[in-house]
Image 1 (cartoon, rainbow, N blue to C red):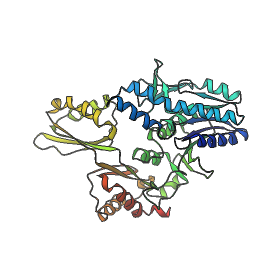
Image 2: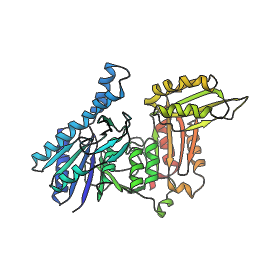
Image 3: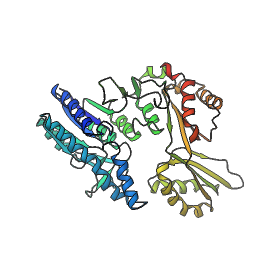
Length: 405
């Protein structure tokens, strides 16, 4: 008997028929003698519909009230999945995040998990029940509902797998696994049989839609090996695990594109110690995640800072930075949303040269201009015009011969 945590995404539970199919898969696994904990997302489209309703009421709704609103999407799904299992004769019980013992900090819309108490889940598993948990949500110390941000259901599943000491953690989605690129953009993309935590983390943070980076960070920290697979078939997926030596033989593992980024330029600030600190402290206090950062060489005591933030945070970024401009010399603020970030990722970069040259030549041959460049040990990212994102992805994929993996 194994203990299995399964997560089903929004498309997997998109309507009543799909929910019934998920219930049949859960029953099949339970009938083999396994203990099953299921984490589900809101049905596909529900979260976006709720956000649209909120913004129809007010352009900038309260984050606390957004958590109250968005949490109902997953609560609908857990009840429907439990009912579908009851219809198959399977004892099942549904839990909200708070009922499942998921405790977070006080930040609304992107809370961090601080502790998990799985005592209630353990009790129901011992009683032979399937436990269905609402992903994407928890409660803070004051009992307020919080949500975990984008990809929160993946995080919920992986976070539960650790204290429950699960034998398997399976992330079910609408794709067969992790691909070398988005197969909807690059038709020759190949499914990977395995990928390291670090590679998956870099791809997730670079725009890959399969997993969210916080989920992968949690899995790496607690050693949770998980598999990304499709809920629409029984084919093997992609195993995400610790790096092993033979993985370095592949120089580049994948290409990712993120169109949800905006470029922020803070220009004409004082080129002296503390200027950058004040800019990024204001962003940190507003809980805005900054990605690529470039500062030009100061001239005549003046410098420019350029960085990227999630496109959904541009309003918050502007609001946070405007009061700081006078403190750093009365600089100017400009925000550009028509950009994309292209990244190539692979642990093999640590032991192979020429990756940057190959990427830059491929983009040049495709007539794609580069606006910003940043690198890490296993990733190279560039900011390009959003209109050229898909062309750039195909060019990079071909240049590194990823269709031959």
